[in-house]
Image (cartoon, rainbow, N blue to C red; front, top):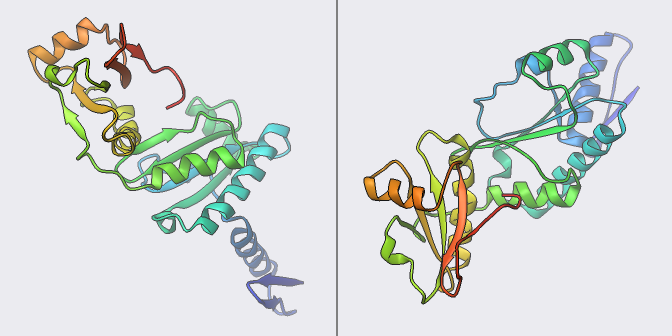
Length: 240
């Protein structure tokens, strides 16, 4: 049996047991796909810098997602995205009965699903189409550096008729807010000079609480565009 890794072939000798051969095969598959096959029970939801695909081998949607994920990893490596070297790409197959049982315990019964955890951004479930282009765009965006220098703290005076203001409504306990803040900071940096970006922690002060109540904020994070020539605030409902 020949295992080709990089430019050098490795051959199993007659003295090598089947376990060694399987190990080399696993290394070869990992080198080609970039996806580590793991048991669902061994996954740590608190681990940083990991991308996990939950799928079921043999099912059309899952097989397509696996192919898209494999291709996305290749394209991300080609792009030389900063921070990519820290990411661990993993997959867990629900076709394995043990994995399926463990997934059910966590309420996972539909496949495929993709989860992304980037340090400082928390764990986020990927909600877009599972295509190569969308996955590359999503992970690449989360890896882009961001800064809070262009995001202003809550101040009613920032909302004027001179320019539109993009407002992010958050709460300290909201884990989704922590995940989304990175994207909001990137938007703030890219729109400097045309849009003012402001973050409001609703429970921080009496005034911020009143401001949130005025805008009928009942979920977090909520993004709203106001000010400028807008007659009334426009809430952001699309994919975040």
